[in-house]
Length: 147
Image (tube, rainbow, N blue to C red):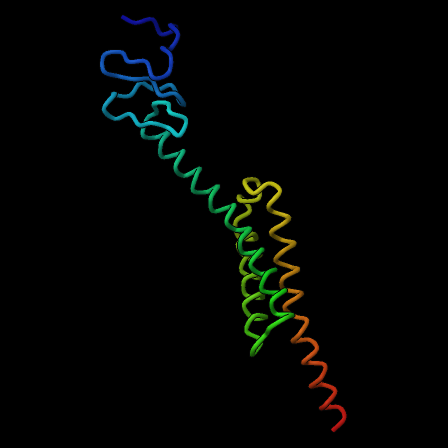
């Protein structure tokens, strides 16, 4: 009978065709073990958790791209804006980024410093995109008032 208080074998140690998972310490058959990104042998459960964690981090970081896109389109809408197309795209991109950040608060922790930057670039992009339509509206209002 084995001692229940005996120390676990070192990670990746093989005992009778089994290995010890480097992350959770579970004994896993060597045939079912996987390799982590750090080069350690891990169980399928830890591999799945690592894959989910990487995907969530990648999604959280890519949200910043929506804010930067809104800002870029907002600046572009000040220079070139046929049919207010770039204004519309900047507003849609900025609002979309803000909606994603509002619906997924769990990304706030993963984004770290990128979170306030994403909000600021989205809002600034929306405001810049509204400059030309605002002046067009004022012009049409002036024409309507003078007639």
